[in-house]
Image 1 (tube, rainbow, N blue to C red):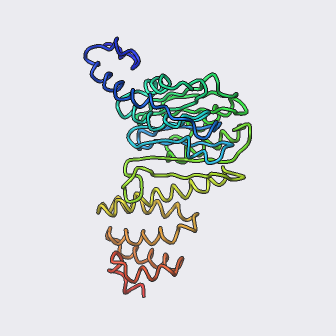
Image 2 (image 1 turned 90 degrees about the vertical axis):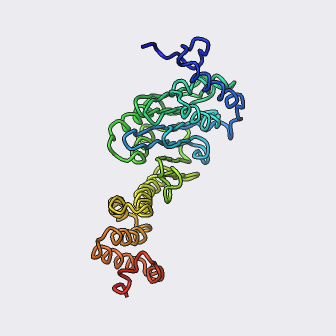
Image 3 (image 1 turned 60 degrees about the vertical axis):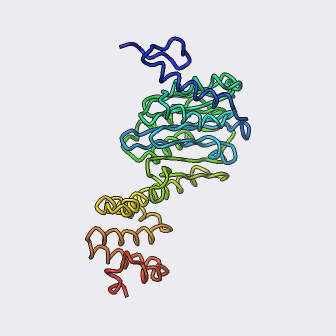
Length: 338
């Protein structure tokens, strides 16, 4: 079997691969020629782009002494991959990198094309991972020290203006040690490990976490399973941890409700029971999660369980009574709720 040549060697591509390589290069020439200006300048930061091929999840977590870093660095698309673009960030690396991967490029091939079309490449830093776990990371020689990264199957970790290499080492170690947990929790743990190891040498300000999965959004219409940001906070890690915990509950809740809407009631009940268990530590979400548990239990044939959950939901939030009185999903037990 002949080795596949790099995408930047078009004239050396074997005949049987020329069509594919040509399509990728020609279609992306226009993309990379329209390099966008960095906005705003220098979001020095540390981040992790990662994938979990077993669950189909991809995502990015990032933190920085920079306002609203989540508006710049993280990009992800279910079934495709994730990109973290930072330092003197070229934000076009996000959508263009994902487009390259979607067209069949490996992480390294996508990285080469992105950098080749960018005059400011020496000041860029970027990490890419494909949905299958292929990864690449790059730190330009013009990035402010300490700057660098580490990569392996399913992850790419990178940072600049850090207290030292220990930051990315700690992030890598944490990610590898957390296999089997939801990707959002793994990304959060890696970010927290980086902060504990020194983080951004200038301090803290913002953080963000994004996880995408096919049909992961509300009612399954988008892929954004967990999407939370802390734009400005004295302790962004504590606040991000709070929001991610709620985001994970919401993710299980969305899975349950999406399955319910599609009349997959047994699967819906599995996810909603998990959402409820996790919501026990989230009082702001618990009443509504339990209410939907009642709806799904009833649809799945558990009338006693549905009645118990509905009564609990109304006790936790009496204002839900008005909804319960007209909700067709609870019609079969409405008389017993009065």
